[in-house]
Amino acid sequence: QVQLQESGPGLVKPSGTLSLICAVSGGSIRSTNRWIWVRQPPGKGLDWIGEIYHTGSTNYNPSLKSRVTISVDKSKNQFSLKLNSVTAADTAVYYCARSQTLTGSFDYWGQGTLVTVSS
Amino acid sequence: QSALTQPPSVSGSPGQSVTISCTGTSSDVGSNNRVSWYQQPPGTAPKLMIYEVSNRPSGVPDRFSGSKSGNTASLTISGLQAEDEGDYYCSLYTSSSSYVFGSGTKVTVL
Image (cartoon, rainbow over all chains, first blue to last red; front, top):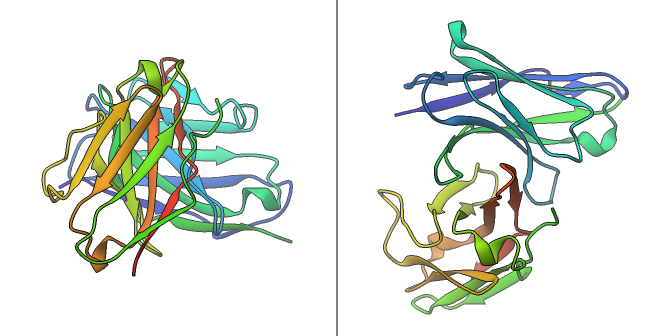
């Protein structure tokens, strides 16, 4: 059973950088799947941030592309998210997930972690 | 890519059927079968319920079914149960290798 677990600071100052890690267990990050970040502002819907393949190939949401970096660490079986120049609008629950490459469906999700942007 | 349009809420009594729509355009939903549906009970992570329009992952009850007509995909819950309450989201894996979610629908069991 694949499991994903997000970790990182729960509070980030405005204009700072949000950094999260997603640890993958029960499966290899070198698989044919893609690895995803999604966020959900309080009381709002889901928003796709970006994805990475184990080769390092990435795709980002155009609305966030200028501020986002997703990277993979195959030796630790984990991938990470960095979002810079954050504002209060970036306050959200951040989820990592696994995407089935052929279907584009997210079959495994982390539990999510709340990141608040505030001074 | 704009969010796909879903009704804000639907409701039904136990045992009834409800259908949630997910409307896009001929350029996205209308020409692409990589539509998925997710269930999100309050305070929990989303769970995959349907992929590729109408396929159910292992473990998802057959009360949940998906379909598509034209630019609109739909999720139907038959024999509604109290445990089905929560938010439901459709999503689309686009031809440009990006993902877009629907606006979300709150399902209430009366």
